[in-house]
Image (cartoon, rainbow, N blue to C red; front, side, top):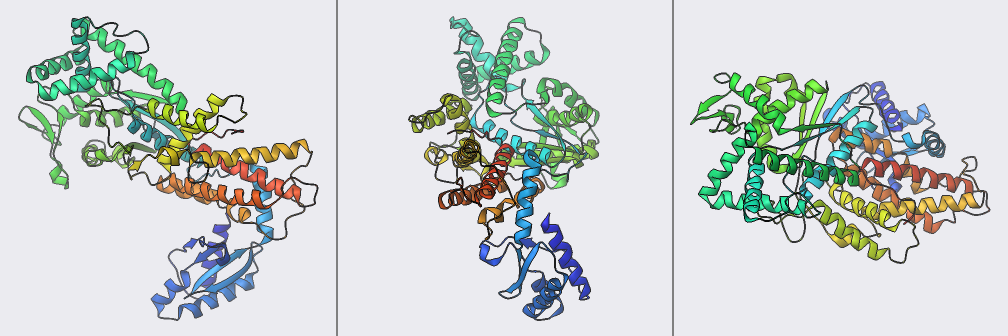
Length: 566
């Protein structure tokens, strides 16, 4: 990348002046008038050695000019001692040529080459609704997985699901009561998914407010683990199967295909054994339970095996790390959960550090905020759940209304792609840790800062290229536009944006870049006649083609589909 050429040039120049700099910071000025790159290195060094920063900046720029680097057209000193670099026409032309040559691999890198990384995300629980919190985890996890793959790693997607635990017992308790009342059918027809969600909400309410029901649910929970009751086994197996099949339908809609599925029914026994083996060393017994004293590490105490002898989430997560590593010998394991599990996961990682220090070292926890509608926070415990399907469906309905006059063959399919893209963009446009209030109208706007805005810019570029094809005008870079366009000044930055998103596990850098890029392309489209019988048309078509490649690759990294027509 040209950034590396500039960094090395600055380092050599500073060395020639018998000076030192630990690192060279380069950034893109917010205004193209101030160049393509800027560095404050002269100001930083001047402060250390007590010199005038502007004078030092002039010395450095004079030296750089002497080198005559083909990628640099000019270097200027600005403000109190910033050094601004303006890239050459030759660089931008060559950049367009290279992107056309690279094609669908444009923006990919090898910084993670030969690394094996497993990413765990989404994690819905059978017997509970696939709600918008799972949708948020899925959007972030899928995008991070794709960024990691694009950076050269072998990425494996993992899904960890709670198929045992109190939530299943609460649902089974309510289903048994329905059966006793003769409320049938339990597991037939389209209404079954709603029945499971209602059953969990009913069981959760009873558990919190009825001591008799609470004891009954605890007994059912034990029987689910022990598998010693035929009626409970049947209800459990049917409910689990239906839930998992339904989840697969949602994954397909969201564009996710998991490589590994892990279940609490698998991790529970292993986690319990791990904890019991380490009593007196890492864990201790307390009031019939087995706990981990997190205070010793500045954290808090958590139960790993409860007083009924059942493993908790904590014990299961320890086992999960072990099982993951046995099935896939990874360099890094990334776990994506909601912010509310941040403190919980610190304790789990501390316990893991003492049992499996190498696995703890290789594990990274990323937490995300909550996706809210204007109606507020949801809760599967109370039944006030906003399901992923209902959100996608409602957005899709609004999109179809906007598209009612559009002449598109597969209007339903395109509307769903736009709806999913609108939701994913809303989630990914800011840093993962922040809460999001979803705005229906803004999310489907074609005017900017939305998924559909990016998709529409892609469709517009496709339309331009189709028009050029019909008129038999091919893209070419031989005769360039005299003045470098803003489009060229943004396109070459794409790999840098991906590199930063990869280093910080933050897809929002890509959404920000693509939104700016789409805006610049739309201005280019409205200002220039791209397809025409003129000498500059082939180069304008080449720019459009490069834009289309870039926006498509960027949308793919966000897990958003790019329809050719909208």
